[in-house]
Length: 293
Ligand code: ATR
Image (cartoon, rainbow, N blue to C red; front, top):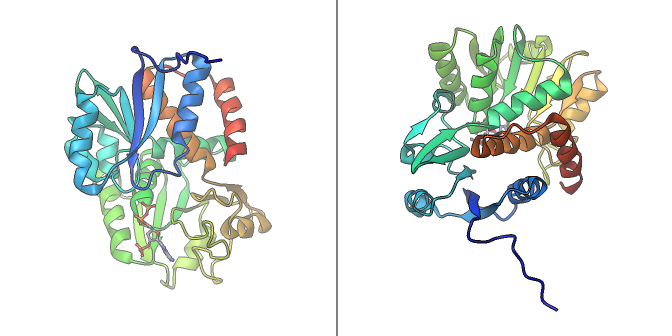
């Protein structure tokens, strides 16, 4: 017996994610689950794009009238030059992960940083305003997170990185565009461990400690957590990294990167559909989402 499948039909609107690799992306599952739940005729597909084809891919998505799409590694920066308009925040972050197609014009947003902020507040119960924040790492993720932390009114942001020049770059963007709150230093700087201990909030933005490298930590043994600090790790696999375990053992509140991943998707979905998803529903989806990762 054959069942007629109406789930994709002539009225279906398309969403997707471009990146390379894309096979491990969980975004199609998240977005299609939400669309099915709401009964919205939207389908989200993974789209593997080679670097040399990025411009054609963007033009193609516009030509094929995609409602919107996500952009993931390694194209979050390169994609900006192919868009019609990009939010001021995303330009400062140097990265776009969400694009909406409005009548053939492509608008870029960054929901990674918004997802980070939402999940941090939800899980720790506190925000960044008036706080001293220590950030480890100075790559693409760090830039978006640091800009967001500065925009939310942190008192001081110390950006520590193995390569000081990348940290200088991010500190310069913040100090020139938002306020004189950022300072950078190398991980081996004499002051680094002391500032780390004194910070209110510690944020690991590097992938050090991610599966399968689970015994590594982004900081050396000279770095000690102070009880009461809130410690965030952008890594979510494993859910408790060596870094977070150390923090918890020292009486710190800990938050991993799972909520950030989840909420960037929720915010993107809200941008595309114009819907505001109810908190209860979002929490319900989140509790299921945690189980599949
Ligand atoms: P993403 O876009 O995920 O932030 P990225 O731009 O490649 O990725 O940045 C990775 C960050 O992790 C950088 O700050 C990098 O330090 P360097 O700028 O010195 O390269 C940091 N990082 C990666 N592996 C590291 C390691 N083994 N030890 C210390 N820092 C590391």
